Length: 580
Ligand code: M6R
Image (cartoon, rainbow, N blue to C red; front, side, top):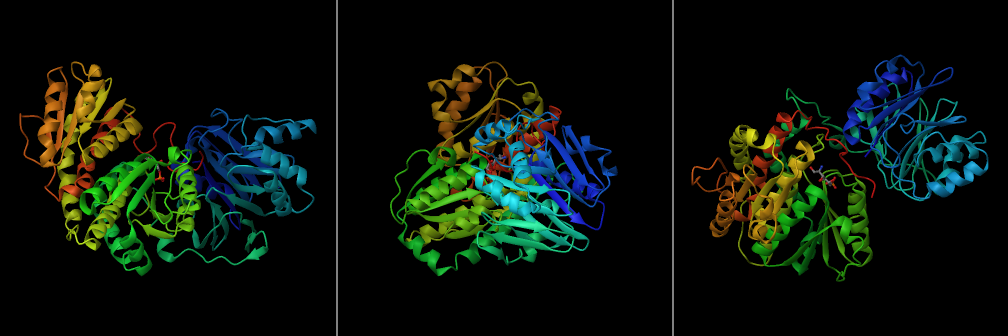
């Protein structure tokens, strides 16, 4: 959700900022801009992707800030693009300033003019107002006035960058030629040492030094571990990150199974598992679907009652939390604002918080009592693919462990990477289905049991990257309303991985076919009725969503391409949703 980059060092800043912004573009791509301090301040802002800044690499100066925006307050226009410059300062901001209107009124009363509709511009005004020769002191004063979330990078006329963070990620790093800052690691490939700023931290970067502060003064942060900093992604010969990440699913599962094995050695966590009688899973989007799959697996294998909630709802439900209840917050990024709020609420009400995240240094990992890091590696495409598989791998391991500890038998997940490999190969068959989807008005994904969660995930992918209206629905519910939408040629994808339920799902399939639907099947059983089918390998039924989701992700990818879209950067969206 917006990308920040900043640099001060011995090299020209503009090319570094532009490279950083390209790496961060998946966080937001409505507009982009950079400001560079040389003999004077130069500013370039454009609507659209980072490539629209072509020519800005000529700006001279060795200190600068840049931003790629996902619009919250104000349309994607040049005026609303960051950096915002007022008086002596230039500012880039991620997050939302909730009291911006009040602060704006205060600045306007001083006679100051605003040139954008954004909440962020008020930060530049306040900084300029409080600046009395020390930019960091001015930033501290400014932050005292802000309600909401922010990661801020600002510069004045000196060759220094000042930074602040609250509820929005921000990293600083040391490279051979200077100091860097960015919203995530993708833009810090030139750094040997990287620090993740914590809540309420400030930093001052000059060419030779990075100083980090909290309320009490200067602090020494531990740098990120080498393995966290390594592995910066490239497309590796694939046309899109999404395809590359799909192909990485087997490795993502294998790494995640391994991560769970080490994590499960934690005795304190084992004690919690033994005592767990009730579980709550929380997540948004794909992570919510992981939670749904986990709920099915936990109830099925361990006979432990479980619920799964959308984080964005849970945080306002005034939820009933039993002291000592285990709440599992799932988030690839570990920075999703709604999931953080829901997790914090559960914790405040006495829950034990387990984080399942792909980013070991994320905010979610810091607030949790236990953190289970998935092994997907960096996921760049906005659509979650391998991170979903990784979440399922650890959550299914967790369900299996819960069952084992209750004397309900052992489950082997070790064959899942190989089965995923075979499923990937079979999923290429969905390319031949795209003709039926390209001009569809709407699409249905149907299933029963855990297959409903998979169907919902398939539908989310199709909406997200192919912009096709679709529903993931419980097959038995179709005739209670949505069947009215099925007409000649409506694509219907039936997911059937559970033998006991497959016959029932087929009834719904026949009902749609009788009304002209174009039916496609993802199934663990041999195809019947001559319907186009991706046959996934037979696996432990409790774990089948990890396989069944793959053809649906692949289908969305091919339909997106067939409709002429870029699957990596879907419109209106961003990889990490750090605002409410
Ligand atoms: O980083 P998170 O897992 O918390 O993100 C949650 C959702 O925003 C995310 O899964 C989103 O739904 C995906 N882009 C869907 O592909």
